[in-house]
Length: 369
Ligand SMILES: *Cc1c(COP(=O)(O)O)cnc(C)c1O
Figure 1: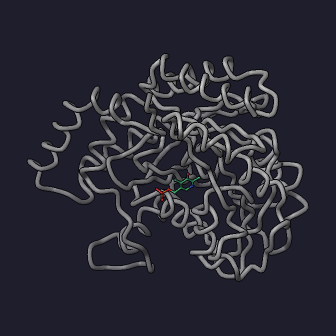
Figure 2: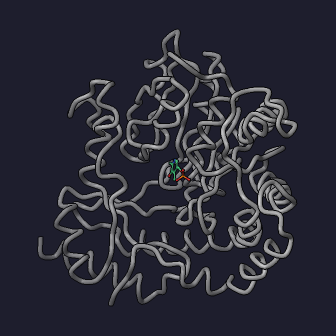
């Protein structure tokens, strides 16, 4: 049996007629940038995300950059980031001239360790950028409490966690501004690059609106030095279709995760995802850990099961971040996760017999190793 890491066959098979008419609608409108489809999407997404407003932008990285810009985070400021995130969270901080200050994760949840945040705060700290990694909500009560106490901004990176909650409140609705991505493989994905900033503060949202469009409110008149990072009409219209299915597909993800949880429980040497009290998990990624990761991955590949590593090298050890002078051993938990993690196939449409095959393939590895 061949099982890809991710397949759109089921999702897009189901949605194809609607996606096609969405494309046709945009073609017929002959309006491709900053039109009614975007406006409608921004309203829909704000409603879904339980914030007052949202602004469609070019991608998830730009969503984070624009959020930090709007908050006035810049040159020489420090922003607390997880040591074990996808590099985009760090790159956004660097893009505005600020310095990413890594905080190690909790090894059970893989999210930022809230007990280590305060020790990293200095007079230069301006913001905390929590990442709801793999789809599990961070402990937002503690993060918001620390931010309030130290007068820091919070920008949530909600790229992997659409519809996750903490104590019943949606991720992406806590921060001063929140960035998300609709990269095709994300839980809510466009058919190309797309992202959004969301929040409740009308003034900040308006600043993002201006910044994403050349810093211009009125065409050819520029208030500030902005970017060109707009969500185009085609992607907005496609996302308007996909929005209608996100709850159903998220539900399907959690059902598959529960099947994995049950079938893989009790295997010695295999760590399964842990959901902490108060948080919910939307399983953008179902991540397991084992010291024998490379051998397990090779075994699965041999049996036709395509697994992936999220992520093989933490940001502090990337060539791009040489300037910060970090070396191996500086963030041991991030490094340990990178060395032992494996993401197994999980997507809406994954069939019971495919789930069983993945489970059987993992079990056969641990029986012989
Ligand atoms: C995907 C992702 C991003 C960046 O989104 P793009 O749309 O690819 O720019 C940022 N942060 C996290 C955690 C992500 O997974």
